[in-house]
Image 1 (cartoon, helix red, strand yellow):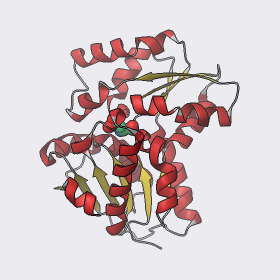
Image 2 (cartoon, protein in one colour; image 1 turned 180 degrees about the vertical axis):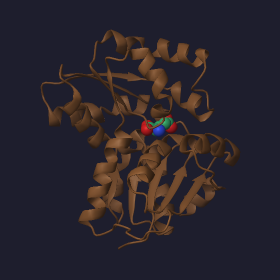
Image 3 (cartoon, protein in one colour; image 1 turned 90 degrees about the horizontal axis):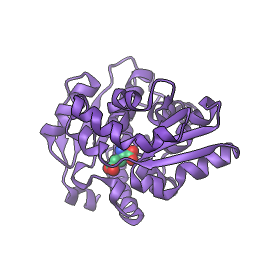
Image 4 (cartoon, helix red, strand yellow; image 1 turned 90 degrees about the vertical axis):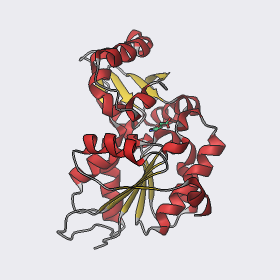
Length: 270
Ligand code: DGL
């Protein structure tokens, strides 16, 4: 029995897609989430910068007393998972392996697409992981950086938004994949637009959902499960605008939440 919170980190509201699934599957667990909006988009930053940000955020969360950390960001998982696993004394899990495994299991034609940030695509992290699971699968990658600011601004519903998504996903539509990994945690918030654009015969994989199985296993194996019957305690931090974060987060989580601002200088001191 361990009442300490699970930590989640992302560059923005995207990580809440992982938190939502965690709250659904692990309703007793306490959560501390940090969205680093002030330094978003991570997808356009260098691996060195991402490593630095990930270390700062993870130290902040560890100082808050978390028992395990979920990197609810594909870009940070691609660049910093090993570093954080090496540096922290708590279990650290990322979204890329569980997302890859789910995609390979779902793809009958062995043609999988991955849409992600440019940083994740360039890292080839999904390509390497999928090859290690199935060497007869072909992966088609596409960077979709325009979707992240749309989601942050809550622009994921109108016809105009659908047109942008249709346009940006044209290359992947031509690749004729049967499975598409939403390899950025922001994208599941615009899942309907993505599904409309690629067609309903393409199976969408959300690594943020797949990672919850890994999380449950880590909690069980390390004796970290919170079996208390109290309602989850949730803490949210953003380095950006509290107002904007709260707006998108409350709509997505369907909850009324309190959001605290945390400055970059506080993170740098962590
Ligand atoms: N949500 C993040 C991801 O999964 C990154 C978005 C960004 O800041 O570029 O990669």
